[in-house]
Image 1 (cartoon, rainbow, N blue to C red):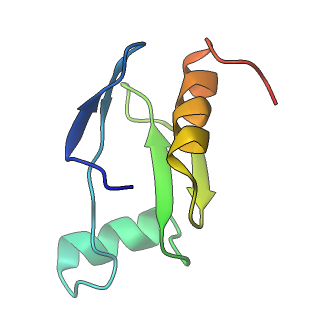
Image 2: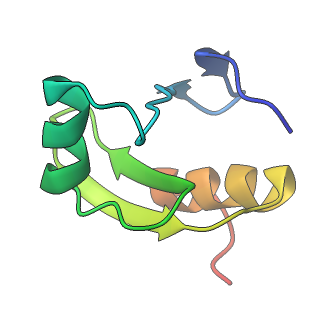
Image 3: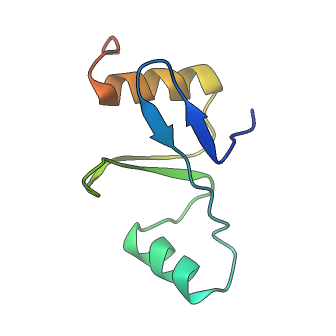
Length: 79
């Protein structure tokens, strides 16, 4: 599945920002180091206050991703 830069889920607004971890730009290098990104893809979940609340590494089916977001929002079933 492909992510748009922003996607509106029915339960909350989620901003998705794609970063190419292979880019040799200072801002990219800083983010990769800050969030300890060692595997691609890595998704870092950051709340509205800028706090990292979780991180997943590796491929994930869209339905699993959507369920994970629901769980982080407190409205999904816990697995």
